[in-house]
Image 1 (cartoon, rainbow, N blue to C red):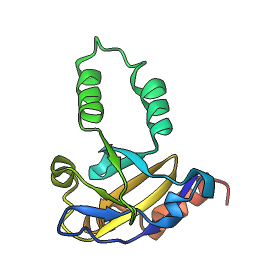
Image 2 (cartoon, rainbow, N blue to C red):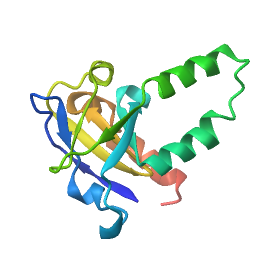
Image 3 (tube, rainbow, N blue to C red):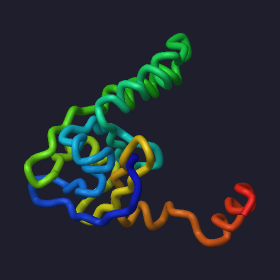
Length: 145
């Protein structure tokens, strides 16, 4: 499973290094060398292993009623914005221009491992978005701590 927070920078060729801990999250025999990346929620980029992307599409997107115009919009946004991306030998992935624009990534990134996906954020965006101590206290109470 993906987990952790990392802070690589975007290079001049629009590449960002996916940390080795995330690439080896499923074991040394299952190193991630390819990701599907797309628009994420809250102005981030989501990255999935191919099998996790397929499951997300089949279980979450395909069942949506296409008679609903909002569902068609959402499908276009997520599926239309998706790209297969090979990682290079240094574990870097090229971020397409439309995703850089959407996420407002310029240089500093925050990469989060979130179980079955990775989120790539402009650090400035993530710093504004992440919860503060009081909201985490409320969440702790909801979880029974």
